[in-house]
Length: 607
Image 1 (cartoon, rainbow, N blue to C red):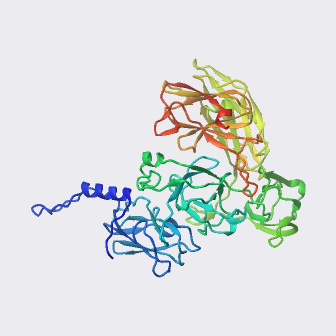
Image 2 (image 1 turned 30 degrees about the horizontal axis):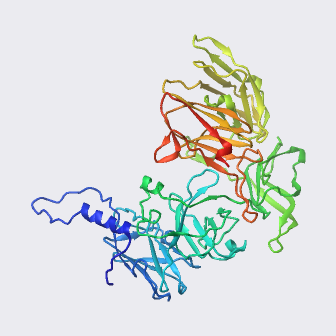
Image 3 (image 1 turned 120 degrees about the vertical axis):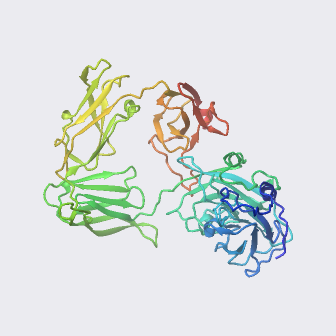
């Protein structure tokens, strides 16, 4: 193959830098060879055939390969997942190694007079050390001209605001609502590890509807039962022109944090999982002798009858989740419960042909799980493990007790809960001991969860001890709880800091959370519907984020969107802190020994 230069600035510059950093040298034969430093340089692309931005590319499946040549031997990394053609075909491209070359082939004929972009994503790495080749996109046309417009954007999770990598962004010209389910897009792109995408080689004067899907089966069509989705409320007409030095198009290493975060983004898509409308019994399980779990495909199933043979109805305890599509059944029967139970269920099920609800009757046979075995150290024989203890967990985070209380979470419903036997003692700085009074609350959403709330707030310098006696609390299996003794006290230390949020112009319901910089750990959470001052005490020096959710119906959770109703999920935003880090305005830098105040105008933030 004749070698040709590549008109792509990022790759050319990267190649020059690599050659400059590692000039040719002669071997030193006077000393024995020594192990050098580990190779950390990624492969360098030295040629492409046909040329970058080449015209009149063959449309025939047998002649339309694209060959990428590198300066070293390379390996492929999940090419079916990473190599992506826009506009996509019904079958993804294939790739194979041929010497130092990667040959990408198309499994179907290309369209005539069409501009294409072929992204390598994270598919290429060097053969020895696995150094990844930066994401690179090759453009070509099967006609005499090549379209040169592009659109960039970012895809995030609607709930966490974290970037969504590997998402397929779809540009449709078909205005029908069914297009995303049935028609492949006119252009598309994959988001990178930062959730960033660029849809390239778009024609002028074209109007697009923009979507994003997880595309778990790689067919470029939306499957609402399995995949998350995002959509724009407005139409998009591309206007930005591709140039060799356009920052949105420069190939960047995914470890180049500053470079990746500096890329301009024109569109913002928030992905959500739609609530299914297809009703059916999705799962059934019997985790233990007195415990049955049912999961339905859609919220609020219409159940006409549910009974268990041989068990009176008044011996059944039902637990439901918020949408009532998950049902936990506890059998409060102290006598014998059969190894196999027969559960009768009458409910309204979605007919797969008519797509309407029809009466359905199912008989479920539910056997208890097989026991687990362990080796008897004395006899050497395997014996079944038999639980005879009622298990529970106590959460007493002192920095959150004023808000959350002391939480006691049992694994099974309790039939005996003598909380008057539970004591909390407080020892002051003079080592004087006293009993701390408290009230007991039962969680309305979880019958196995109890909350102890102290009548007086925790005092600085006091040491507290929670004591739960053994053989007092009993569950539905007739098992007793072991005793527990747990100590706690308020955090102390001169280096602790705090954040106070002054919330102004609050005209709706909002959820306010302080999280770590990765938005995964929640330090404290508030629900507000009016102006408020929110304290976040006992914080260590570090990086934090403030996440605020518009909770319009005040249910304390983020409601998802509905694609066909053009309903977006409830909006989640990150607060841009006034003392943020330079490279990320949404990460707040909190020094030690600092009491930080931030005023947030929610009406302005969510306008």
